[in-house]
Image (cartoon, rainbow, N blue to C red; front, top):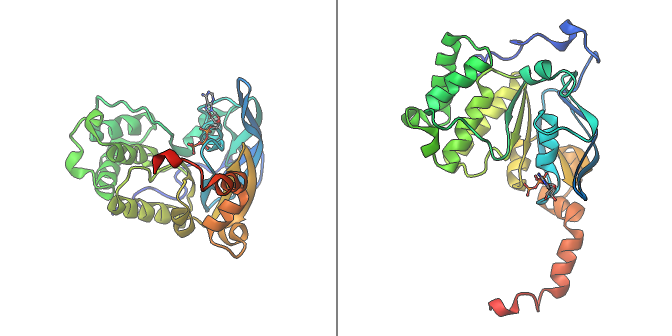
Length: 280
Ligand SMILES: Nc1ncnc2c1ncn2[C@@H]1O[C@H](COP(=O)(O)OP(=O)(O)OP(=O)(O)O)[C@@H](O)[C@H]1O
């Protein structure tokens, strides 16, 4: 099992305060007024979100809410039309090397160098991230074991299943022991046993000083894993805070439906008896 010590956490990277920081106590992730428009569609409309360090933070919202667009802008994959994204005080768009060195990213629809085997891919990403050969060897072996990929380490990634691809993508995001992990749907297509392994890795990572921001549609998962979250819909944050603050005495599922499900649920109830009658 991989441990925080094996991942070199915390403090492998210089603290932002050593390099002339814009803030004395920066948030792990600070999104300020992010805007993104595709044609006439405003996917993200002035989104503000602050994730303090040491949180296991969930980002939830209905399909098309703007989660992936937000995370893409936060990780330097998609340039915002307006606004800023800061990682531990470093601006992702004006100082990308500093910000990107501090984060590990599992993007949506990850494109990997899939003509490499799992182990080769980890070696490649580790070298790109400046990890020593010895550390790459140790960390790869432990990550592959922790994610149940040891037996498939020599297989080409192109031949991996969807869940295996997700897991090797997660291993790539972890290999340089980042301070912040940003994971778009990390449990999608992952089997329950591997899912439990990933939960353990993320909990240990946060316990040792790391910060996780993950998106998910599964309320039970967010409720049992995350300590804080934001509910996003229509490219805006509708609610954010600790789990208890956002739930406000209900289950997260119920609160989510109240916050974002109103109009859709109402329409469903109104037309409920007639809807899809041809299907019966
Ligand atoms: N490249 C693009 N071109 C045009 N529209 C886009 C593009 N990317 C996203 N959108 C639109 O922006 C909105 C937000 O999409 P986004 O993928 O961020 O949502 P999401 O919350 O991640 O959704 P899901 O939960 O379904 O993955 C949607 O209306 C989507 O159609």
